[in-house]
Amino acid sequence: GAVVSQHPSRVICKSGTSVKIECRSLDFQATTMFWYRQFPKKSLMLMATSNEGSKATYEQGVEKDKFLINHASLTLSTLTVTSAHPEDSSFYICSARPPARSEETQYFGPGTRLLVL
Amino acid sequence: AQSVTQLGSHVSVSEGALVLLRCNYSSSVPPYLFWYVQYPNQGLQLLLKYTSAATLVKGINGFEAEFKKSETSFHLTKPSAHMSDAAEYFCAVTEGGTYKYIFGTGTRLKVLA
Image 1: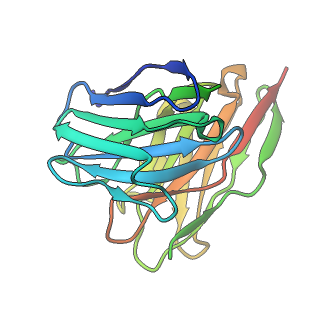
Image 2: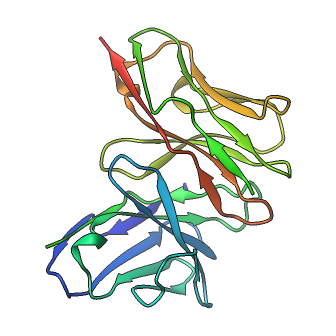
């Protein structure tokens, strides 16, 4: 149980275009999802917390207008990188937290590698 | 504010040897602590977690970790390393009063034949 998927797994786009990444909890409802960014050989940096039916909460330094997050249902959150530039190239990972569990465990998706040319 | 320190960004062990990956945390409230493993180009897989129950926590793949409040540590161990254990390991603590994780910088484990 507690499977999280991401789509696409890999995407290459041209500078200036927008890219949407989907994060789905497959076997549980997730009122809270998280979006992370991971630079090569680095740790995960939390970008934002996504709550179903409300606006996402962004971490300090993360541009909310550039990284649009939508959590329209209990099983789907999307991250849209708008007007992508080469410096946005990174590995983006989402996670979801089952609300019924009290241990605050997050279950992670397999990640999406974005390359902006 | 909570923080996590993982000593040793790279650890090498021989196959069959003891694995010890260190994690120290700082927290003003009783924390939840986690160890995750990441294989190349993949997401994070939960190895084990401490949630204020038993201080010795057993996880998957033969890993275990012991919560030591006096030392503010949560080191990960495995008695005998296997080649398939080669990966990046992350320790994480929940930020007090929230569901957010604070991750350590990670330790890359290399297993030598």
